[in-house]
Amino acid sequence: MRSLKMFSKILIANRGEIALRIIRACHEMGIRTVAVYSQADRSSLHVRFADEAICIGQSSSSSSYLNIPAIISAAEITDVEAIHPGYGFLAENAHFAEICESCKITFIGPTPENMRLMGDKMAARTSMQKAGLPIVPGSRAVIKSKEEALKTAKSIGYPVIIKAAAGGGGKGMRICHNDLTLISSLLTAQTEAEANFGNSSVYIEKYIERPRHIEVQIIADRLGHVIQLGERDCSIQRRHQKLLEESPSPVVDSKMRRRLGEMVLKGIKSVNYLSAGTIEFLLDEKTGNFYFMEMNTRIQVEHPVTEMVTGIDLIKEQIRVASGEKLKFSQEDIQIRGAAIECRINAEDPDNNFMPSPGKIENLILPGGPNVRVDTHIYAGYEVPPYYDSLVAKLIVRGNNRNEAIKTMRRALSEFYISPIKTTIPFHLKLMDNPLFKKGDISTHFVQDLLVNEGKVE
Amino acid sequence: MNIKEIKEMINLMNENNLSELEVEKDDMRIRLKKTANGIEGFDGQVVLQGQTTGIGAKVQASGAAVEKNEIKTVEIKSPMVGTFYRAPNPEAAAYVEVGSTIEPGQVICIIEAMKLMNEIKSEIKGKILEILVDNAEPVEFGQPLFLIEPL
Image (cartoon, rainbow over all chains, first blue to last red; front, side, top):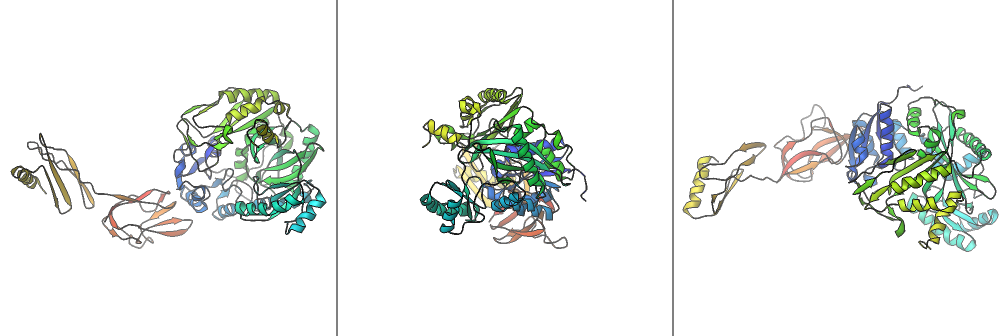
């Protein structure tokens, strides 16, 4: 039985806005913080706000934020009791979690077993299917040959999608409408999977046209209690990258929500999950069917959306359950109140094919007022480095209902000023005025259709 | 070098109508430069082997000059995060001391990380002017460990 003593010092193995987020939660809980940083991040806010900071390597991610020996050394010399991995980088690296365990440092997140099971997309599908969750019709195993691919496609019916078994993030995915494209796409998908994940294994699923991406947030403690915190609709995506997320989903009614919640709890309880996680579904609006897609064994970028409608601080809960505390609220305590929307502000030029736009921020005005939250690490004079992802800020608003939230988001976006680098603020402003978006009539094709209509993309 | 010697140098310049004179002796180098108004004078610090001595060398009347003796120095920085040790174990002698001459490939310290002792080797030939970290102190990536005079 673990000691129930709260951690006195935590190392944050991440950077940018999420590192700040974790540092803030720790400081409110009286926990001392250690930041690690690459040379490029020397002037970063997370370095400034942490109680201690250790430079761990050169600018590239592999030299720094993915450098396990450097991070563990930093943890040892600063004598921390736990490491929070944030999202991305080492957050879903089971090997890293194991090393932490062997060094007697608590990894704030799921167990290595949770990560291995859910990291293998096919094993995850099988496991959730066993727990009674519907999955998208598809191949039972990795596709070994052209003949097998053709046979599978025939039995599930076109259109189909080829996906990387070890992957995610939209890489190694190919949509095929007939036998010809299936054969040619099979090879390119395998090559892309190999390049991105070091594993060329692919499988085939039925492709649902115009699906909605609905995901459910969960949290579990070490004593077997699992709570689900409602759904987020993340259908607004570009190239499989989320741009905007909201809760609740405008097309999920209370009956669907209940059904979804029951499924999720059953699935999670069957795999002895620990800490925060998200189960992703595709919703086929035509039939109202949810299909399990995959599970993310980490805290996610869009977690503030759920925080704004449920009032639960997910990072603090992660820290609490990691230290052995029991979840203090029950499922009945969780209610989605009002509506929340998050816009991911990236340093990209929406008028130039979303070309990355790193560089120095000379002028910055942050939005404010009631119901507005900004999670960001940028400041006037900050140099956005070119080595990492392009997310510079998350703008989250809440309202009594979706329409109120959209009005508030519109106001907040119009107040938000970042210059001279280009950002996606103007793109989000257009979204707020888009009649289909305002109606809630969205699928994962929404952004693509929007850009095509504007003549910005073929 | 002392003031008497410097005065002799100034006389030498005047007698021979020299505008500039540079003299090197032991580890000290002095350059005297004559300007239109006489000989420029300014305070200088002379860095001697292993020590730093301040010599206020401004000679009033003749405005003699001692130029700051700039020895080129190089920092050896930590290539990793860990704990710095000056010797392979607590009983052993330190790998290097202030004043030691080091060769490329020579082990100059240990940085311990994740229970592994990593021997840190010098990439240059030089003399140790200063050891910037105490024994058993934690160090981060890029932190200066030694101040070296390259040879």
